[in-house]
Length: 403
Image (cartoon, rainbow, N blue to C red; front, side):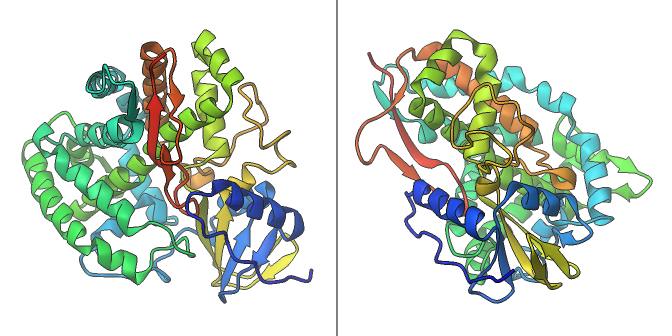
């Protein structure tokens, strides 16, 4: 197949539709596309993205060879199950899974409901407020901090670290962090590691009923997690888990606001709340693209791709592929055509997906309970977005709740 290099990715930060249009055009015309930057490729179709995500032997998730390093951020990679291949991935995920169980997540529902209700209490009586600032940003941070057993008094630290991570990784042509991104996060990484090492030490000495204690005592035939593996996983959970849940919550509210008939149906039948969340994740996955590296020459979409190439997998495009989904750009509460790729697939399916879904379900139900007239506010400044090439979701979302 003859290929041409890509046209520039749309740069407008608040223009998600332009990015979708660019992705749609290339999915139709050049589904596997070499970038103008040597060694980088773009993958747009659902079938191709799914194949790459499923074949970990050919398409590696270990990007350490192309990510800038710094001594003060190296600990994050040790516990980052997202960035590992077997057998290291298998060992770490096995140990983490013994502590971070579905039962543990399900047991959080009463406390998450209490936390979310408390945040909404703080905006009671207002006709308009920023939903991100009031609820969708702080709630995931508080939930993760509580899950880890972090004292309430230290929640502001976790919120500050999460904001620093988002700020250091906002936008850019590459889906991988640059040297500038890494350097911007060094001070936060030092502070996080010092805090968490001291905390893990206390939990090893006196285990409590929290995730850090469970991680510290989990064991298999492969041994136990060391301190950096524990705090690396905790850091990954805070950063990726926080971003995912905040984006899912905001995108679900936006999708329902843009589809008033669906919103009315969800109000009438709350059993449709999970379907609304899944459709929002399909149309607006928190991370618009994932990356993999070829370990050997492969053929994808008619293109021969050498070993050592970086593939950008556009999940936003894959989830809107008409070969996989009927009327793919339509928000459909009753869609039943197989799983979307909004939480990944296969070996690296998002471990935090159950927690993100749970938080989104709780918050959406509370919003519907409390605000019969909930709608996205009018005005050009009511909604502001993260850079859609990295995070799909609002960083500001003003809502009106009055009659």
